[in-house]
Length: 226
Image (cartoon, rainbow, N blue to C red; front, top):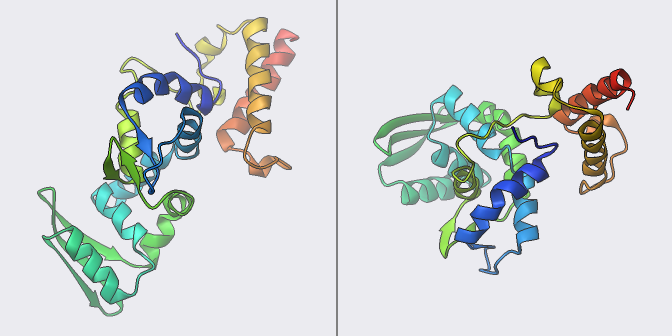
């Protein structure tokens, strides 16, 4: 069984094969270094989960949702033109002040109420979109953040079990930790916090799973007298 004490370690593990077969470049076609790719993947590791969660609730195609959010700040006429140009089987109308999108996307009929309620529900997705390139080039093909993260996920080993922080580990697994690997995990978690893009001043700035993992380690260190 292989353990990953943070997302960076997991990304670096999967990235070795990902980078061998793919070239990722920014919107100006400048290729990213391996270190830069690691940072992009790390910052957006939950992007697919956020999108898929909203798509399951609202029954929206994930690529369509992403495209709508990328263009959400356009005025209605430009928004309508952009959507109908990208998706030839969709029609965009405004009814009682609400933007409606109807039609086929990948053989599935879509009915989207693109209103403030949906936009608010997508705040985590928008946060990541706003901090990313408008588009990327993957092996020379113009692609979105969704394309990039989806491709990366296909390189995840089929027999790999991921845990969102050690707090997710079940009791029998936790028992496998001895003093040496426990201490190593503790130091790596502290280092992970320190290497964040911004200095961590309070626990509120830390990822919930990381806080939970540290709490588990504190208990384990006490029990094992590490």
